[in-house]
Image 1 (tube, rainbow over the protein chains, first blue to last red):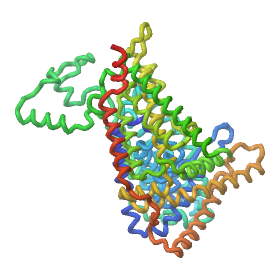
Image 2: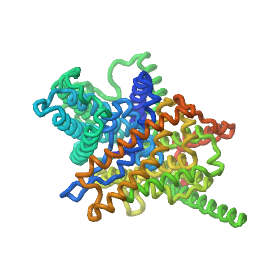
Image 3: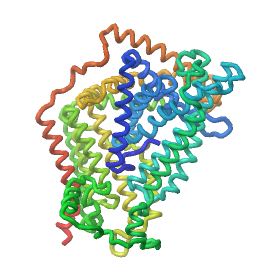
Image 4: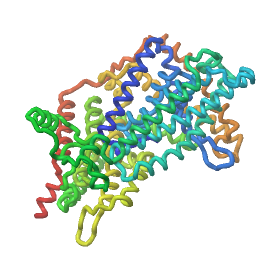
Length: 352
Length: 267
């Protein structure tokens, strides 16, 4: 799910960077209160471990396929959501910089899609409410806790991966990169990530159950039943509402048709719908000196009109002279490479 | 497992490359970071049909690769991770977008093909730029540059520590998987019965090791942050380099230079 730079427009990438930066800032501020210095080595070692753990092939018996660990839910169950988020950001940064897994510009988006949902949504809305609830109380504390760990890990991983995959679709669609219709894209991404999420949930729960058996004090919110601030039912309702609002609201924005106000003013005659008020999009409403001044100021200050650089629809890009010029530039690049190789060989000969 | 050995050797490779002393290696890290980020932003901002306008941007990575002596083949090998997703997204374009864009005699090239090629070019160029940054800048110089940009100290220290420990952890996991493989020769990968104990054991040992690590760091004077004493000084050439590059990118973005070049020949 690591996005490349090419899949995002600069404006979308900048928005996601801002969102991730705000979350990083909030996490750092929360952690500072708890004297992080002592926790830093633990965070670093656990991140390095999750990084190494991502390279292991977890075979699923009977299917011939294998799963892979992402680690957001696991990290937040061990370190807490803020420390887990920072650890995930570092893992993603190292993967991006040193292993070219994800682009530098897309790092903000990748942190949001993979780290934010896993660490915050997974922890506050799933791990903590489930672990502190009184579910399965009849089975005895140990058995009940084991089942709760499995349930919260699997649900956590499935839901956060679904949210992450959906965000990838939204960000790519908002950037106008692909011709693939929104519905088709969603239809491809979500089922695949459902399967990935299930397997990751099972891996996470296996590791966390092991840790619970060996050293329960390392896990958060274990053995603190009854300390929940709100019930599991409330949590699930909140989660469902948020998903519906975000998903529904943003998918409406992804539609190419005019929004409610525009539709009532201009109609949608070209697509065969009614004309409504039938106003002319280019020239409607009252014109006044103030409106014109505001319009001209906006034109000058709109650095990224329509999410692209101004004048980017130039047709020069695809004319014959454009192609010829591209061929010249490509040839120049090849010449530079050859010249570089020539000079390096000369240097090597001179040294020898 | 092969992935682990490959990851370790890739990290070592990057460390070795970053220790060079070409003019690019000796540039101030912050200016290299600024130029890389600006380059990626400009490349990504080209519209999907602007193939020839985008082409001029190939000159930056090509010149930098030659100046720094970093092998290009290594960079393209790294592309194997990112390109599949870019291709998957772009491959649909020729199928869905049939707007005829270029007419070369009797051959008509649709917008779908152009946008697919542009997408792949953008992916490749931005990857080459970030690869160049990391291959010519050691991690501690990069962290020093990030601190100068007021990135939070905790995050930067965590980055440095994690980077240091990834090598150690990869080695440990490699040894453990080798031991597992020798005891389960027919088994491909990790069987479900071992998922929990395999990583869980390592996790517990790592948490204990982290406690010892913290004690030894404190005993050696660590308080909350490392001090990057060897950051190279900021020379005027670095500022000129950064300003010049960003200015050129801006010019290339605003004016379609290849089209101008071509129009000199085709009247």
